[in-house]
Image 1: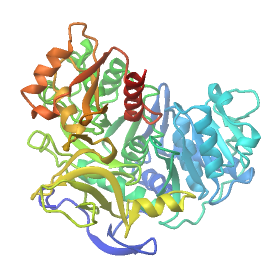
Image 2 (image 1 turned 180 degrees about the vertical axis):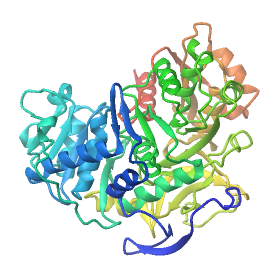
Image 3 (image 1 turned 180 degrees about the horizontal axis):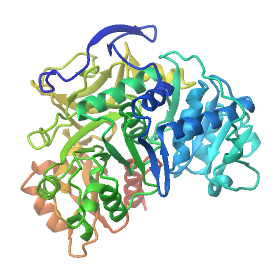
Image 4 (image 1 turned 60 degrees about the vertical axis):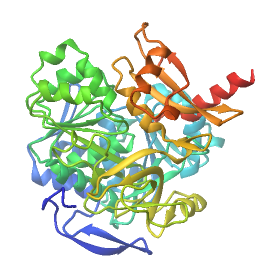
Length: 535
């Protein structure tokens, strides 16, 4: 905690979720709905949400969410009921989120990239009574037998067979404000499900408030800030790092329906963006735009990133072009309600291989396979505890018992913590390669490949071998026809131990396969290699 300095609000140990004692902020709001009510008091004349030509000030957002809550209530939605949100990045996503929270119901955001089978599974598994959806996704919604409790389909726009969102905005009388507890589930987010069925992580009011406070404090955000949401709002990053954090601050959130680097730069200049959180590839795409050198981005203070390493070349270019910008690496997951670590301001260049240090209320341990903590700098599995860690998975006690122990979430990530508290994540347990007894962490190899100027995207996976068991194979996305496997091999040979150097490559101009939440599908890539060796 020494790297942070005395920036955090006062804290104390508290008992929560029956069997956990966690560090909590003493002074805090009680839940999702209170974030909006507080923002209205803090910034009653300020812009809350901007999306295209739509602009809502905080009192307007409160009015619309109250009206939609009344419509939900009139149709029998009450505390604890699940309401799915199958929407693109748009203003109505935020309205629906806070309307659901006002009733004490549970929001279930679903990625618009999900397919019919996945949508049907989520709606049936969580027992959703209603779904707010894009009109052009109506055909992906399940039939009655596939979602037995689904009673209402509410389209944001005209759609055959669905109700119309605006018709549910009722203003005949105020809707109920439900009494909620901090430990109540406010949102269920289904994990990506790269192996097996997705699991519904139960994000609580307690966790959402603490994660929002972690972002606000670490990044020094206030009502004067303007953030652009260019990542999906249905993902934990968009939901927490952007929506609820800006609500806590009383700042301005500009929503991009779909990321486009040129449009992002234009919005950043027009709205005087001060903050955002994106993946490194999105920063790189911005740098490729001719408009980058012409846009006035001098107000941009904080550039959060995560999900992949930030190439040094990108960091240096951003530092030269935007001296006011501070980059901050963040590490977390759906189960931790977003950030478990954040790199302190000004430290990203000194700790390029680190995802930062633990946020104030997080407790992070690195454990071996026997369940014992390992010494500093030693690799093991990262375990995370805190008020923001979810209590478990919806309607899945088996997965909960497998993934949680004494309040710690077992992340499945392999990493280490140095003597100064900096956390390094080297791989997922299931992605580690065993080449003739030598352990190879794919993230280390990917970091080297990402530093190559012609590599736009990469994924390193195991390739079956009858002699060594597994060998190293790299999938590379590049639009440069001059790139050859020999060039990449030579590049890696000067930067990696010989046994870590990829022995084969797949070069493509197509984006690498990802799931609905944007995570690389390494299993799909591994399976494609197995198919090649058996055909």
